[in-house]
Image 1 (spheres, rainbow, N blue to C red):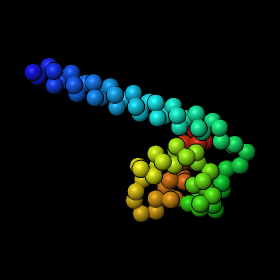
Image 2: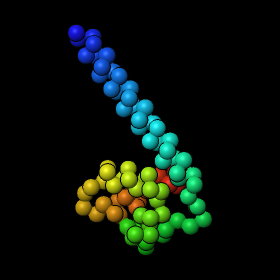
Image 3: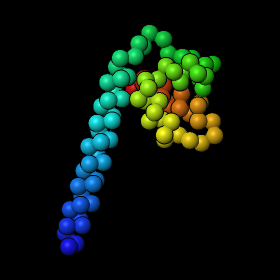
Length: 85
């Protein structure tokens, strides 16, 4: 019984890793499609334009992860860092 429970937990963890890796690849592919000829400047940070510059998949991820006060500015700056890396 214990080994069956352990195997189930191992399978769940493997599924989580697989899902996260798939999501990362999808976001990475979306980033490659974005024109990098213009990055929003620091004066635009947190504006609608700097948020809209991010691919939709990255915006969804960041909006689910970042829920604190000042989330727009954090989303924009972290999103820009991810885009540039």
